Image (cartoon, rainbow, N blue to C red):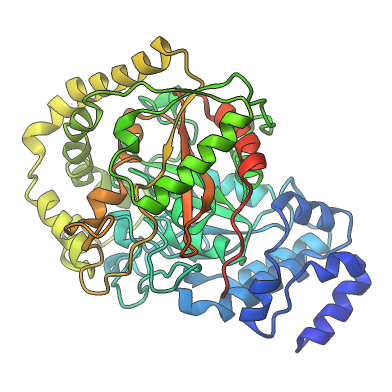
Length: 508
C-alpha cells in the first residue's frame, strides 16, 4: 500500500465501510488528525479479535502517524521492525492475549530487553538492560505491540519534557507546538494526544503522568505506592531509571479513562474498573489547591464543578491547612538524596556496565537537570533525609488520612495544574512563567504544586480532562484517594468523564 486510496480499499474490504471511515487517512497529517482520533483501545482489540481488522494494519497506521508527526519529538526510539513482526505473529495466530494487537508506547526510562533504555540522557543513550520491567513483561505477554520508546524530561527530573539532549529534543504539545506537553512523561502524552496510539506507560514521581495528561487533554494515573510492599500497586523495583524508590512508580496513560483502566487491569490482574454512581459522592476541595489559579483554568474548573454538582456530587469546602509546608519537608530531601544510591542500584540490577552515577551526571545536557544533579552529587539534602523519611513523610501521610476520615470523603478534587501549558524554554529546559500577567515564577514549582503532595504521601491520583481554555489549551482535573483506592478512582473517573467529555483532537 503506497497511498491513502489503496490503504482504504484494503481496510474497507476487511472492516466494512463504517469502520474504515473512522480511520484517518495517512497522506496528510493535518487532515488526518482533524478528521478523527483512533478508536478506543477496547474497540481496536475487539476489531482485531473478530478479524474485522488486522493487527498489522493497526500497527502500520500507528507507525506511519508517528513518522509523519516526528516534529513533535514524542519518540526517542521507534520500534518499526519489531512492532510489525509482533503484529504479524498475532495475525498468524502465533500469539494472543487480552491486548493482542493493540499498539502502545513506553516511556524511555522503563526497561525493555529488546530496545535500549536511555532515560533521555547522553550517558545512557545506547544502554541495553538485560531484562524487562515486570509491567513490560505482562504487557508483552498480553499481546500489546510496543511501537516505540517515548521522549521525556531528561532522567525524568522535570515537568516540561524540554529535553536538550542532542538525540531527544523538546517534546511539543500537539495542541500548540510552541508549548510544553508537561512531563516528565511528555512523549507518551504527546503520542496519545496526537492520535498515534490510544494508551501507553509513563512514570510518576511528583506528577509525571498527571501533569502531561492535564496539559495534553489525556488521562494519567499515578497508582498507589504507600510505604511500598503490598501497598505498591505496580511492582517494578530497580528496573526503571530511578529518581526515588520511595516515590517512583510506573503509571498508565490513555486518551480516555477506559483506556487507562484497561491497562491497569491487565498489569495488576485486577477486575476492569466500572463506572460508579456520582450522586452522593463526597469530594474535598481544599482551598490550598484552588488558590492562585490562572483565570482560564479557574473558569474551566468552576464549570466542571457546576456540572458535577448537577450530577449529585457533594463538595466539602474544608482546607488541608499547612499541607504545602509539610510537603516541602519531604519533597526535595527525598528526591535529591535517594538517587545517590538508587541510580547505581539500577545500573547493577539492569546489567548496565561501565557507567557510573558520576558519568551520568557529567554528561547531562539539560541545564535544569544539571542543576538538580549538582545538588545530588553534593548530597545537599543528606542531612535532612532521615528526618524526612522517618518523621516528616509519616506526618504528611497522617494529614491525608485524617482529612479523608474526618470528612468522610470519597476523594479530593482539584485542578491538576494551576495553569495551562506554558511556552517551551529552549535554553534552560525549565525556566519561568507568569500567572495572569504577574511577576515571573519558577515553572517547575508552579506546575508541580498540586500534584507533588499526594506523590510524597504515596496515595493514588487520576488526572482527566476538565475542559478547554478559550485559547484552545486543555485543562486537567485530578481526583486523589486513600492508598489502595485506585480502582475506585478509576470508577469515579469513568463517570466524571461521562459528564465532562473527552478532549477534542488537536488541529495538527
